[in-house]
Structures are given as C-alpha cells and as structure tokens.
Length: 309
Image (cartoon, rainbow, N blue to C red; front, side, top):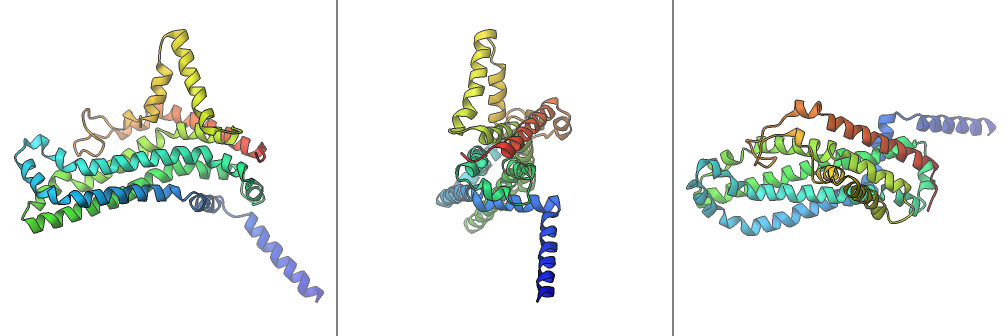
C-alpha cells in the first residue's frame, strides 16, 4: 500500500513538474485562449456588426443592376466608386467596431481581474505576469486586426457572390463587377492596412490603456483620457502649439501614413500604392513600438505588485 501511495505521489509530482515547465509559446497560446473565453465581445461584436450590415446589403441588392448600368456610363476613372462603396462601408464599419472593442477591452483587461478578485486564482497558476500582459496586449494589437480582416473578407466575398448571382439573373455584366472591384488586391490591401495602421501604428495607444488598466483604482476611462488632455492643454497655453494633440489624434484616427501614400484614395482602392519599406524604416513606427514596450513593462510590474481592488 505504501509503495502504491509513493508511486502515485511520484507520478503526480512528475505531472506537476511538467505543468510548471510548459513551453512559453504554449503558455502564451492558452493565455490568449483564456482572453477569448472571458471576453467574448472580441469576436461577438464584429460578427454582430457584420450581420447587421449584411442584412442591409440584402435589402438593397436589387438596385445593383441599375447601379451597374449607371456606372457603365461614367468615366472609367469614376466607375468603381459607386460599385465599391458598400464594400468600403462594410470594411469601415468593422474597423470602427474593432477599435471600440480594443479600447474597452484594454481598459478592463487588468482592472477587471483585480475588481472581481480572480487575480488570486490566475496568480496561483504557473504563468508569469509578463506572459499574461503580453497575451492581453496581443488581443487589440494583433488578434483584432486579423479577426477583423477574416470577418470582412468573408462578408465581402459573400456580398460579391450574391451580387454576381443577381447580375446573372438580371442579365448584367458580371465580368465588369469583378474587374472593377479587383477583389484579390482589395483584400490584400485591407490586410496590409489593418496590420500596419490598426495594429502596429496604434500599439502605443493600447499600451497606454493597458498601463492605466493595471494602475487605475477606479474609472479607468477617465484616467486614460485626462492626462493626455492635460498635457495637450498645457502645451497650448505655454507654447501656443498643438503638436501633442495632433500626434494623439493621428494615432487614434488610424495614423500610419507611412504605410501607404496615394492621396485621395481609400486603403482598399486598387490604385493605392503601399510603401512597406518606408513604413518599416520610419522613425515614428519604431518610436511608437518603443513607447509601447515601456508601457507594457510598467503594466507587468504593476500586475506583479498590485492586489485586488
């Protein structure tokens, strides 16, 4: 009996040791899975927005044949605009939804576990504070742009297929629809825009929000907004300039002008010229990533030392 008990203890000890020494990449994977389990709005909100827009698209699809005939009579430089407008609106709606979700998720990411005292449970697991904070930061910076692209791609593809079927039934020009949209290039440009502009360029904003989430005792939204507002106001009073406010507005509004340069076009326009090389060597991009790293390091330290609210 003693031998069996000792064997069981050794077996459980070995399993516990294996659990403690899980690879970092696996811990990160399960930490991200945890965020998706706990914060279902990450994917429910974009899916709901896509569903509402798709319903509206179905109600207006019967006007497509007339719109195609009108577009055929326009100048070639302007034929694409009316046809691509629903696709641009769909992408814009999902981008806006992702931004709203990312902001509120980041503000609650660290404060929420202190508020409901679940931090005691999560700190009892063999997962470092660094892994937890990085997994939370990866949601708005990396996962949300990719998820937004996936949902937008499927929504636009479904819209294109239904539009093609309607044109076939009505005797419209399906080839013209596919040619004007350039769906493949449009999708690649959308992915590039989301990763560079809505991911990398806005990373400092999300880093700041996570830092505030880990520090603020209450009302994280106010603590996130008031310091930048105070700095911008002070700059305006003392120096008469608005450089800080303009920088923040550019980041919040999407920023990332280094990623693409074609004035007067939207990111999904096939004529948009992307400048990946210029984006990668831009000082603003690397300074922003450096600022993001500082905020995340501070958030790790806060989580290590902060207790429940």
